[in-house]
Image 1 (cartoon, rainbow over the protein chains, first blue to last red):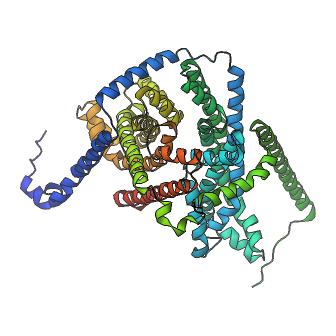
Image 2 (image 1 turned 180 degrees about the vertical axis):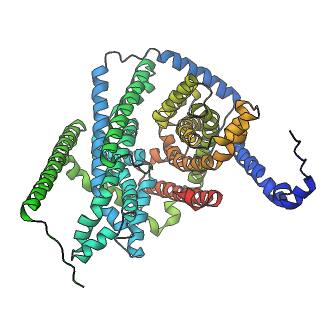
Image 3 (image 1 turned 135 degrees about the vertical axis):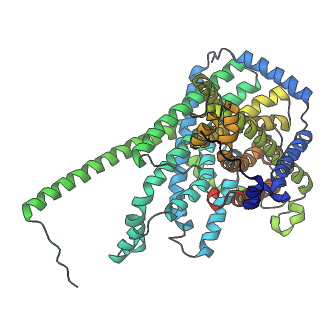
Length: 284
Length: 294
């Protein structure tokens, strides 16, 4: 076997100057960025009153709480918890449906291929963006002021905050639709409404259905927490049990939530594949 | 130019038409059944969620007038006629907003670092042992499924009131979410470089460092920035349970009916979320080109 010739370093250096002699700015950019990110991190730790002593005593406390959680035990309130879980699922289903029904017509107004005028689309889009900028929990608080405590406020909160998200996602789905079908309908003398109904909807409905199902999944999670501010469902029970330090019930409730979310994920995954095949759904 | 359209002979056409009608009828029946099941579920849900249309219609006026009231100053004038009065507490609120952003920044970074440490163990193609992968995956799943605010509720009891609980809650939730996304990126990575590095006798750690890491860092950073956006929203409500940030001010304003304060704080939150969205979008575009912005 012959020995490979030793490469000539000088020649290589001359041939690939940007590999061997990178300018200082390029070499320093990455470390500088990491250093900057780390500096903000440390500033944050100090500003947010982190201290090793607090962290340590908190960890101690947390370990103790975890021990208290075992074994999970609902006590005598299992029926209450089950009906609260049902309430949570109802909130998610109703909220998602209402949001989808109202978002569909509005999303048409925000889609470029339906409303070509930017002047008309802009306010609709900003309106949807503002709704999305406000968290579901905030909407829940607002609705509680309007319709009172209870699951109904939760339904409306989820409906409103999803309305913003759906409006955006639907209009993107509509913009991504093929316009040949629409042109075909127009060529055969259809009106604008015909174009939407027969040219556009068959293309976008499966996509929309997939997104709605995906949101139903994620809303099951949101619906578990809006109870914390008093908008019904299992979150109400959870927050109450945490406040009175009934840790065994807390861990049981958390387990219930995990199982319910996993079940919903599984079901809606099956449904999604049945509707749109193995096409990926845009994740939000 | 005239083209003749050939029409099939009668009997053949009738058979085809028949088959078509049967197929359509079957599809319609299936659709109707699915719709019926769906509506039944909706009705059951409506009963379960105590939906009361009468309350809704009686109080819907309240919803509209609520927005009317939050945009009215105590003097009765519209808020935008006197910006100074509307944002009277801007100094305090800006400070709380800064705290909110800081909470989400520290939480996201800590979560991203933890997720970074765990994701190679969770990915199918790089995990050193199946049992380890199973354990890490279940841990990540747990951290991701339990809502951040539930963690915050528990942490506030363990660590005391204040932003610390919020940061830790966001960090844990982000670890779960990012850990999954990161490990998916790793699973999509090209394994040939790993084989190359392994063939030189490198350890598992060196394989990760020199073969996998260069392929995945861009994706990691992109997801971490997205998570930061989401976490800013999340941190804005952490104050509801006493875990720091602007949420504390907001919940007080809403519960005590300080109407114009509610709108002022909401406007500040929305503007902040916009600015952060645009800034991270720009940053992602700068760092990873246009396609990373989706």
